[in-house]
Amino acid sequence: MQELIEKSLTQVGKVLVGKRHQIEQAVACLLAGGHLLIEDLPGMGKTVLSQALARTLGLSFNRIQFTSDVLPADILGISVFDRDSGSFEFHPGPIFAQVLLADEINRTTPKTQSALLEAMEEAQVTVEGATRPLPHPFFVIATQNPVTQAGTYPLPESQLDRFLMRIELGYPDAAAEREIIRGMDRRVMLDQLEPCLDVDQLGSLQQQAADIRVSDALLDYVQRLVQHSRQDPTFAWGLSPRGALALVRAARAWALIRGRQHVIPEDVQAVLPAVVEHRLREHADHGRSGGEALAQRLLAVVDAVG
Image (cartoon, rainbow, N blue to C red; front, side, top):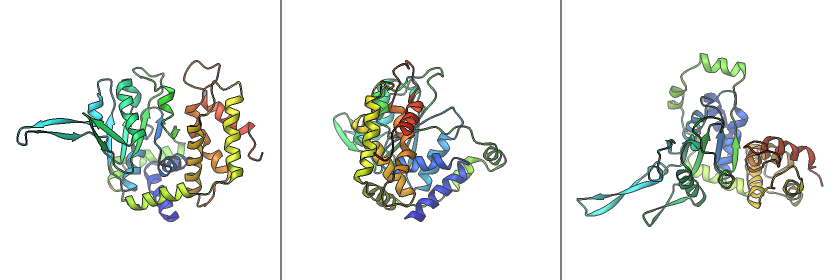
């Protein structure tokens, strides 16, 4: 199974050049059974990463381009009356896919955002009184532009907390950008990708990630991190139990990618920024930033060995 993980990472890396760490973060998020938020400027490869992951992992893929006029029914689906049968027939929306790219989620209204985020939490949708399960696995990759850009509806903290991890892709380095510019069109490359896994193998990997051993000493380290975030006056609020659980889940998946059967402190440290930055704010910060500095503060102040 380790060879399949490495093969998948390498294949996605051929399309999204120079972003190995971010690809590993995205795969870890999927193996941990969470959802991923990517915040970056347009044109950085967010859509390419989503499509490459879906094709490489053999999963069905849909994309929703969010705008201010998108309604919940546009995502979830709608029942339409069929004259021939004399009954209503449900037409599923694009949310019924194993990988859903929710593009520019902060450009739609809070009501539509909530419809998607509730489905993420419950893995099912309720339309006109009928509950319908979503495909398994169900992995949402939501992208958002920086909130300083015009026409955005920032996600509130309670909804940001639904995402297991948040990452940024950033600009490529000079060598990677040269390869992108002189290379094949990314759309052509995506069409040429072959699945490296099937759904059953992915499910097996997710179960292996959940079974990775976490020692009491490692849990002590996680709890020290959480307690420091709650007690340090620099933090506006501390990490919730959901945040602590997310940190352990992500660390387990990172250990699996690294070929280990147990979690070590370096696994926690590797995933901590992506797991906690969107969950933390500074007291003095009245905007939407501050999590990056707080994550680094946790790593610097809290010792791995108690």
